[in-house]
Image (cartoon, rainbow, N blue to C red; front, side, top):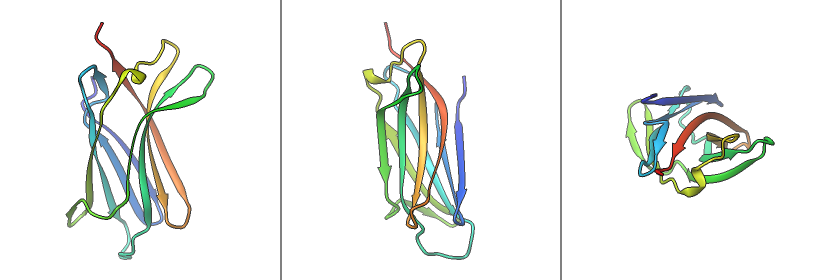
Length: 130
């Protein structure tokens, strides 16, 4: 079982890393983790409009449906000398139980003030108690 999972996106002099504490969830678990935002340049200007975290069910035909979401703007959070740390929690529900030919996807999307969007996806699992 994976204990942690990481996505890393870099654009416009900013690095955004999303760490999920547990990728194999069972009923009763909460999807939690942190988003780390680091400026790679000396430019202190805010460049990010917002960050969106989505849980998607990818269906057999390649279509996606949103089953969980969380988004935030960078107006606060925990500051350290290396950047900003934003913890998050997304509570699963019955929509997270995908069929046998479907998979659950976690997607981080970063939207910049100049309109540029970047995203990264990874597979997570969720099992309901029977």
